[in-house]
Length: 401
Image 1 (tube, rainbow, N blue to C red):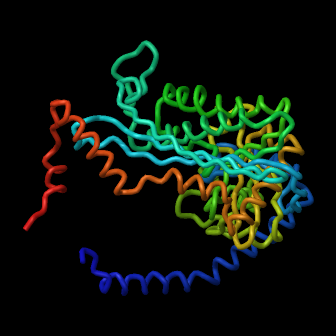
Image 2: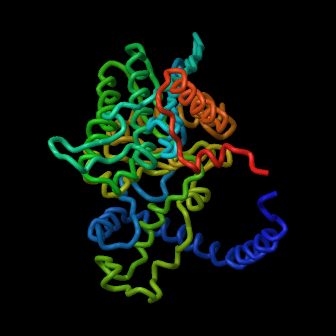
Image 3: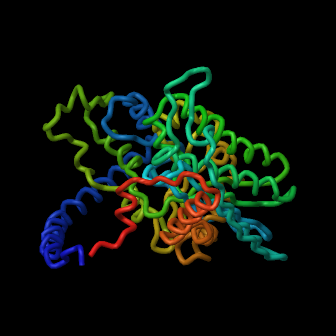
């Protein structure tokens, strides 16, 4: 056995001891957050102005407020007939120790019809990418700055492909129908902040956002509420709005008023996650008020698709549901997103059943990866083509005595 669990056990004990010590403090911070949320509810406009004045001056991400802080809304009734479409994906990354530079993306799609004529269609689409134009992203008319599509950037491309397939499914929905188009994870492509602008233009402007636009345009003659579902979120955007409320300075400015190492008033809610806050504010099936993410990529690049979010209580789960602005500002689409996401969670024992099925169809196992590379390398041998690999790769595949 490579891992000595007997040595880890004592360290686990020490970890739990530290956790127990901080329980009372965390409970006190949670109560402070709840008290602040209730006390600020009567003057949201003033807090919104303070948040706007603090933009770019805090060391934490603060949610923008739309309609309140501690509001809660019951789920609207379900339509008589409706559909849920969802996509998910998995991939096999480029392996520099292998003979061929390539990657594979497996996108699954789920279509569930409910009502008078129930039906289900589950499919998956594996795509192999090996051409030069698919292996890099390069700026127009420039040389030497190519970004290799691998690692984090490949994960972003997979997300774009998931959204593209979702838009294709949405276009197949009949006129006059009501549907939920569901993605797993965030609508905000957070990882793009680490890449040059031409990568953002390719993946976001020409990719992800163009897919959202296609779904938006379909709402001319049908109702399609697009949303993403984040299970067990660790976000603190809303609690950070309470930090701004607590701050005695107006406008708040962390660097100016709170030098590093100095105790800050806002630490009265430190360590509290949004999930814990809304566990105490929401009843079963209820959603929270709407909020807007103030991430830089969301503010600067998303435009009419700017990401709003709300929290939803489904059984024991507090989930974060993200929606584009055109869903958030349309009462019918917002209500449709609320009721259908909740219904999916109830059918899926706490997690949207469409996303659960999409994940099962998309997953690529370790055995799949080995079989994929075996297929690639045996094909090279059959075609009498060079099949070199690194010493490290060969060492892993050889049995040592």
